[in-house]
Length: 89
Image (cartoon, rainbow, N blue to C red):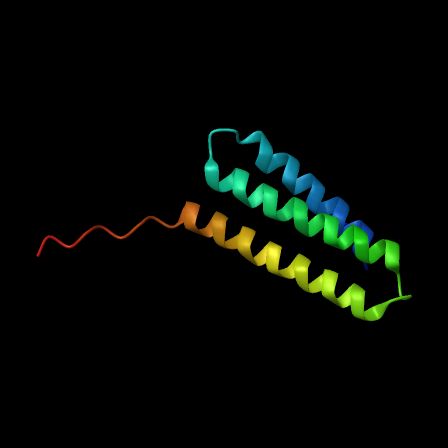
């Protein structure tokens, strides 16, 4: 991992994670998280293309990437958190 990664490097790192998640074909949570992270990576690539020319648009893409990453994290967390057992009472 680069010491101080830019948006393009972060997109590449997300692409690697997406490939690993997509390899888990039997897991719907992994597939869903992979799709969200792929969208986040695309938003980061857009930021890298824009550079500092259009800060407002760059910020919009960064916020989009953060939302997609948070949604993906939620998908993966729900996969690893067991559902509470229904109360017998």
